[in-house]
Amino acid sequence: MVYSLGEIMVQINDLNVKEKSQWCPGCGNFAIVGALKNAFVELGIEQRNVVISSGIGCSGKTPHYLNVYGFEGLHGRSLPIASGIKLANDRLTVIAEGGDGDGYGIGSGHFIHIMRRNYDLTYIVHDNQIYGLTTGQASPTSQLGMKTKTTPNGVIEKPFNPIAAAIVGGATFVARTFAGDMNHLKTMIKEAITHKGFALVDVFQPCVTFNKLNTYDFFTKRVYKLQESGHDTNDKIKAMGKAFEAEATNYEKLPMGIFYKENRPTYEDSLPMIKERALVEHDLGGIDVSSVYEDLM
Ligand SMILES: Cc1ncc(C[n+]2csc(CCOP(=O)(O)OP(=O)(O)O)c2C)c(N)n1
Ligand code: SF4
Image (cartoon, rainbow, N blue to C red; front, side, top):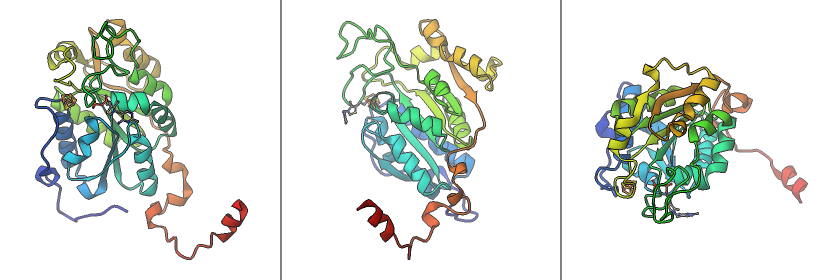
């Protein structure tokens, strides 16, 4: 079921909310919300057809700041919520938001298994390489050597590589972008939403308060655009090479853009019962489930 207002197109103002932001001034999260709003307007997606799920953390507050449907869940649980929403009504645009601690730490098991199922979802990870909300502990993507409250002598664990994990894990769209490049951020979000299948958009999102290493300046000096360097998004092996470039260059060269893209049937495509209409449109009245109860007794 998709709700339509006919000829009325959504405008940025429709997506604004009155709630005052709790984010620190200058936080990269503002750009993500701005890019999402612009993406919805430019794609003509009405806000009543969008649901944003999130976990816990500064990123988890994203659904508060856009006038669309939202569900702020538990820490790391943004993806199972999003997949449940998608199965209930696969005609909706479903966006899951996560943090690097939230999504790549406590929620990593969901990440791996939801990718291989290929639900038609967009997963935006606010990757600030630190725990922001809990005031500056190391996260799974914190850079080697970075001093944080929990790593006073510097991070000694090898950082998690979400791009490589997504390519191996079966995501059918894998991209990275930067909150300091609004145009690129919006373009990646639009590409991810229009892609049919599971799309990861990992966003370098400076946490201006607690991460003094990975700043806007740090990324501006190091990022370059894959789509301007002739990268072939169909080539999984080359995509893996690019996924390891940051690590191989000691974070001096940070490719951003679409690493990998493939067309594969979605999980929903394989469910004949929702082909004609969404699950929410099914009439569940008059179904006798007593035999199922008896079986379970
Ligand atoms: C089960 C559980 N464990 C721990 C916490 C505490 N906690 C809240 S936010 C957070 C880290 C958030 O870091 P990240 O996902 O990187 O998000 P950010 O705040 O940087 O956006 C933690 C550990 C929690 N809320 N629930
Ligand atoms: S703590 Fe960091 S991530 Fe959280 S709102 Fe402030 S700047 Fe943004």
